[in-house]
Each structure stands twice: as structure tokens, then as C-alpha cells.
Length: 263
Image (cartoon, rainbow, N blue to C red; front, side):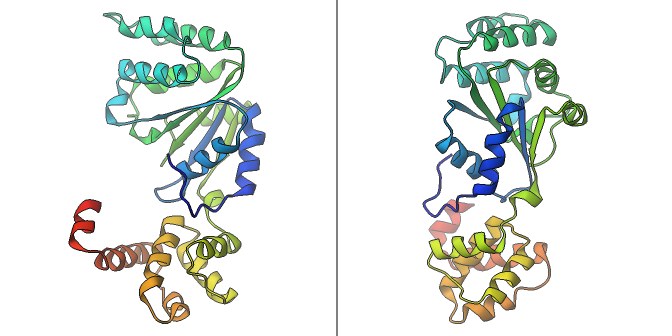
């Protein structure tokens, strides 16, 4: 995904991602609008390992679909890798999941350098999908070159407890992704909607709970108010009410064509 021009680079999280590369899996789990994909895009932009990105859709719960796209993602970095997996995926009848995992492990282990594979929108994989079994078995004996990053709005149907117990899991959660006051200040400065009062910044962050999309909506709304400080101070009612209010107010300020396009 493209990195926004007004990106607030989050050094503390980038350092955690760098140090977590020694583990086979990084999980980025948080609700919508907390900047999960943007964070990983920013990290990969500065990372010295090659990377591939796989964005899932609802059809990828089908194991054959998943294998085709998984292979294509790996081959975007290593063009001749995983050809055996591709042959198995094209077979009229798929082998068992353990056989597929053995083939994937062997082919990825043969790669001559480490790489990062990002799987985004993993919440679209159904709980009963064999894709979960495939990744679970792969992570039990992870190929050395592979660092897997899963981005999801909720925990995937994997045995996270076992991965934690083995020290194989690096996690970034909603409370980690929340913007702190200085990050809020940096974001508003980048959008030229800077609020001078530290008290007002703290009120904004407390009401929005560091929710980055909410902060962006506030920055849009501030363009249309004469007294930004008063507008922020009057944000009340908790996050659900603020979400509704900001969406309504920001959408109302757009023309019909923009609203139709957004919908």
C-alpha cells in the first residue's frame, strides 16, 4: 500500500518490528483505522530485507486460491522459487495439508537470503479454512529464510499461545498502535492543522484513544471551523459517538460526486 505524504513515522514501532525479525511471525492485530498496513509499508520501505505483500479477499479461504497467490507473492521476490508448490496447486486433487507444508518448507529453506512475506486482511480467512492449518504447521517448523507478517482486525485462527510459549511471536496490538500526544502533534503539523495548546492535544487524544483515522477526520473537520480549540474541547461521548459524528460531519462537507465515490 502507498505511504501517505503526511506520514508520521513511528520509530518506536519500527524498532520493535526490526528486532522481531529473529522470530518467524509478527502479528499486527487491531480494529480498522489504527494504521496497521501503513506501519508495515513504512517499515518495508526502510528494511534491508526483500519483501512481498499478499492482500487477501474472501475467496482466499479456498486453499488452492491461497496457494496460487502465496506462490505468486514469493515469486515476486524470487522468480524461480516455489515451482513445486505451484505444480501441486495445479493438480486435479490437492495433496494433504502436511504434504503441502513439507513442500513449502523445503522450497523456502532453499532460498539463499531472508525475506519478509506480509499477509494482509487475514480476518477474511474463515475459521474452518485449511489455510489456517497450513500456516499453523508451517510455523511449527518455520523455514529459516521466512519472516511472516500477518495483519488482521482480529486474532487469526492459529495457536498463538503455543507460539508465544516458544518465543516465536512478535505482536503489535491496538494499544501499541494508538498515537501518543507527540505523534498527534506531528500529524496535525503535517496537515497544517496544528493546535498550539498541549491541553487541547491531550483532550483530543484522550477522547479519540489514539485512533489514527479519527485523528485524520478531526484534521479534516478543523479546516471548516473558526475556533479549533473549542471544537476539540467539545468532542465528548466516547469513541463510538465521536466516530459517528466525525463521519457525518466530514461526509456532509463533501460534494455529491465525492460522497458517491466514497460510498
